[in-house]
Length: 69
Picture 1 (spheres, rainbow, N blue to C red):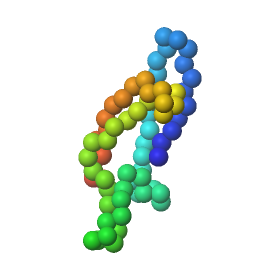
Picture 2 (picture 1 turned 30 degrees about the vertical axis):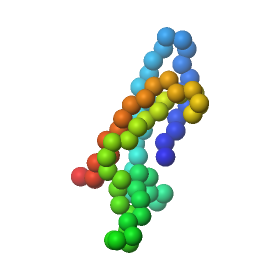
Picture 3 (picture 1 turned 180 degrees about the horizontal axis):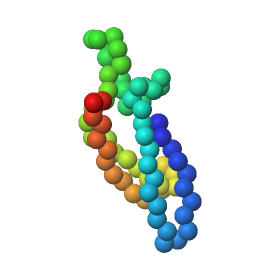
Picture 4 (picture 1 turned 90 degrees about the vertical axis):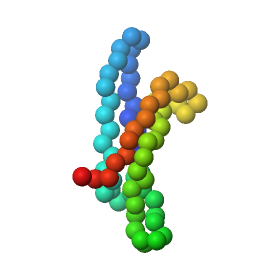
């Protein structure tokens, strides 16, 4: 979905921004809706994890997925 490796020295901080295109061919944040036979956006709140690996999470947050406007 989204990944970016950022190197920081101790005490440094930075802003990292990701854009997730819901119309991308890999259908990020979507699921197959068998009732409509189409991809549907998985709307709602989702957790975000930041760390050096999946076993070393340093920061968590939440993202809201809304329908395209």
